Image 1: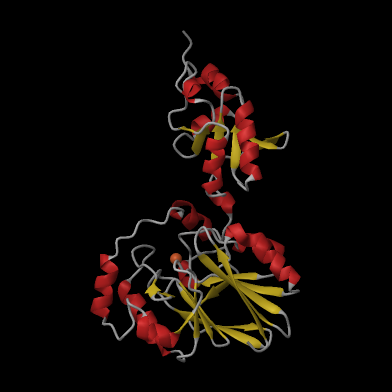
Image 2 (image 1 turned 120 degrees about the horizontal axis):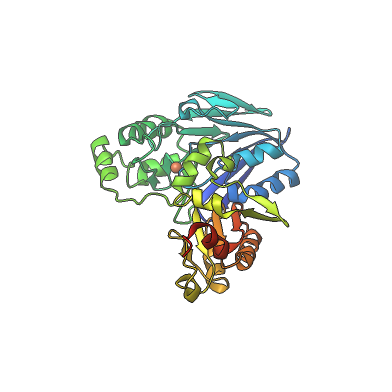
Length: 346
Ligand SMILES: [Fe+2]
């Protein structure tokens, strides 16, 4: 590709593609749909390439992952940009259909493509279209939440995206089959949901019949993304640092029972023994059982670790931080302290 830089980056947990585009002459760049987990990789690449990041563009408010926008904005001079219809007040630029964002000697053009969500935007740049979750490779985004509408998605794809030049390269926000790109001409022909001149009625029926489960991070992703990826918004506890370990007091945990995940890291015998356990806690014994769970988990999940006296739960907190968890804390004093405070004395 002439005069431009283009990187397609991948986040495997949510199968999300992040794109970095730049005018190679002026080095002005934009990042599209950054993911919280891969912010440091992306920032490193931007630094290595000597780029000036101008924009952090979101194709929409994501339900399946937390945006890296806040973290990238903190470390660059870039402005965040999202559709005005998302009604988010923490963004720098509110996008509308047909807006031109200058990028060095080039331009990014916004194309409103509602349907997957009401506030979906596609971005056109140098023969490429970044379609977010509107048009996917041989598929489309779902339309069953966030004001999704099969009718609107059909119109967005058939009237706006399919009217782009046939050779336009299509780069979606996700792919679950291992594809990396397509073209408008291929999707017009081969997309099984909407290609081959499929009717709107057919498309609506296909979308209605999809039996999809709710994205597993949605309960955290939507509030966090509505706050531009500021994770403090979804945080329940405010731990203090004791010898470098985030620590919470048992009365703080008591007030938040049912609102925060509590993991008890003792043995099953202790869990069911005389000190009892916190009713909403999950037993995951310190050691391989806990480590396995943490390795597979979401690094932004807020977890309180509990044990008998606070020692093993401190180790569990350390382990979680080592694995990249951001919002884990140790409950000081463990169940001994908990029982002293909250169990009736004989
Ligand atoms: Fe989405």
